[in-house]
Image (cartoon, rainbow, N blue to C red; front, side):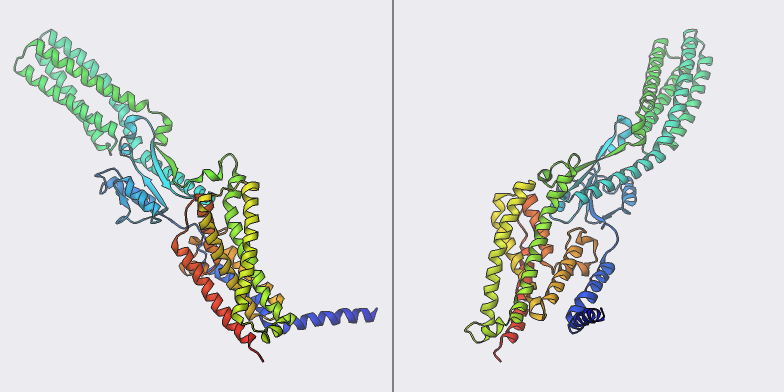
Length: 508
C-alpha cells in the first residue's frame, strides 16, 4: 500500500517539476489570462457607445428656438455635433450615414408644429444602416425612449394650458351668441343706445378672452388660429359700434351681425376640433418610425423567427473565429514538434533553409484551410440557409487567404518562441480568449477605449468578422484598409517567425 502511494506521489512531483521548469507555460497559465481580463476591465466602457446622430430639420428652422430646445432634450442620449450634423435636407444626412460619419439620422417634419391642428400623430423617422440584431434593437429602444420624452415635454408645455383655454372659449362663444341675439332684437327695435351697450359688453369679454389665449399660446397652432378669429371678431364689433354711432342703415348692420355669427361659428368649430382630438394623440403626438437602410432580408424576419436571424448573423463571425483558431493552433504546434521529434536535426544537414521550410508549411496549411472553409461554407449555406452571393466569391477567397496567412503568422511566431507543445496550446488558447473578448464577436469594439480598439485591430479575426459579414450578409466588398491590416499582421509575424526560426535552424 505504501509503495503505491510513493509511486503516485513520485509522478505527481515529476509533473509539477516539469511545469516549474517551463516559465513560459506558467506565464500562459497565470499571467496571460490575468493580463487579458485586466485589459478588458480597463478598456471596456461599461455601456453602449453613444450613437453619432444627425438631425434633419425643416428648411429655415435651423436656428429655431424649438430646434434648440429639441437638441437639449436629446443630447443626453445621442452624440450630436451642432456645427456639422444639423441638416435642412435629408440627402446629405443619409450620405454621411452611408460614409460611416454617422450612426443614426433623425428626420423631424414640419408637421411637428401643427400636430394638434390635424389631430393625427406625426412620424419622426429614424434612419440607420445596421445588420446586427442587437444594435438594431438598441437603436429602436433609444428612439422609443426619446419620443416618449419629447411627448411628455409637448404634453406639459402646450396641451394642458391650450385645452383649458379652449374650454373657457366655448363658454365665451355660448354667451356671445345669446348677446348677439339680443343685439339683433335691439337693432330691429331701433334701440341704438342699448345695442351699443351690448356691443361694449361683448368687446370687454372678448378682450379678456383674447388676452388669456395670447398668454397661453406657446406655439399651439389651434390656439393661435382661435386668437386670430377672436381678433377678427373684435374688429367686427368695433366696426358695428362705429356704424351705430354714425347712424348707419339697418341692412348694413344686419350684414355685420351675420359676419359676427360667422366668426363665432369659426371659434366654435375650432373648439370642437381641439376637444375632439384623440386622447392617444394628445398623450403621444409624436411617433418613431425606424428605417434601416441595410439589406437585412437575408437574415429573415427577426420578429417571427429570431433564432434563425441570430444564427445567420453570427455564422460569419463563427467562421472567422474557427479559421483563425485552427490556423494558430496548427502552426503553433508545427515548429515545436519538429524540434521535439528531432526532425529539425535532419533539416540542418539537408539543403533546406529556414525560409523554404516556413514557406512550405504556409503553403500546406493554406491548402488545408481552403478545403476546410469550402466544407464549412457549404454546410452553412445549404444546412443553415446562410446567404452567399456568388458575385462576392473572389472577395471571399481573397479575404480567406489573407486571414489564413495572418493567423498562420501568429501561430508560427508562437511556435518559434515556445519549447513544448503544451506551451503552444496554452498560448493558442490565450489568442482565442483575446479574440472572443476584443474582436467584436460578442461586444462591439466601439464599446472599448481607443487604445484597446487598436489592440483589437492587431487580431486577424477582428477584420475577418467584420468583412465576412460585409460579404455574406450585405453583398459588399471589403475596404482596402482590411487587406492592409491583414497584410501588415502577416508580414510582421512572418518576419519575426523567420528570424527566430533561422537561429534555431542554424547548423551546430
